[in-house]
Image (cartoon, rainbow, N blue to C red; front, side):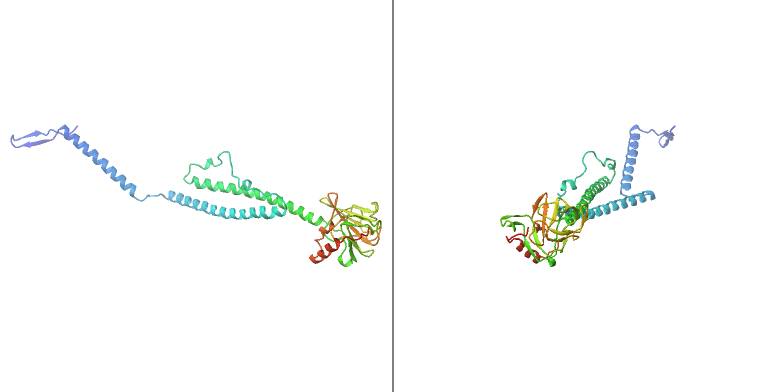
Length: 325
């Protein structure tokens, strides 16, 4: 119950009751409410402009967040370096290794393909740094995929290199009789005069004149598939299967130093020069077969002849003279 207030009236010399008007009450209420609103607004402005007050836990979380952002930046720099190194390896792979081993390069579309289909990074969305995190994960996934592709390519190159090494050691690539043992290079591949019929006919190999008993060497790695005299005209002869559809033949031998089924290496002693079979004088008749067709042996002496020696041999082989078989 509100207190009743009075005032002293000097004219009537009595106390009179103070009557409060309704309009004044409303003004007082309105002014009080307005004062409170203005005070609240001023306090809000002051609060918003004050430095943010952090708790120790909030400070620790902020430091951890800053550290994670720094780690992601460092991770992206490392991925830049890894991407550069990988690009150089890919360049050498396509333009050096695969060219040397005669295999098709890997197209960029296959090397640098991304990931299609569903959103693989949906669980990383909705955070303050989602863009940075998703970008880093995506780069790392693509880089990992490229490394897997390159790793498989290098595995393939290693197999090709091993096979290439075997091929290079198998191809008949040296002269079957040493230069110092030769009397002369009697006849080359091509049309020559037959020593018995005196007619012009195709000579399918090369004749190396040397004394009887001169060593004859395997011109490449392989397996002896024949060492006998059961082929017309060749006399005692040896055939070596080098693989890769290469076969070499050594004819008119004096005797053998290998047997059928024996594995030989390039440079192994396999027999000795003679004049057995259809032969006019001691010499080695040498042939090379590729895919069952005879080819010119002159193209296969890069293994043990100098450029000058090869040029001299080539000149002698091109002379259309009389063969010795």
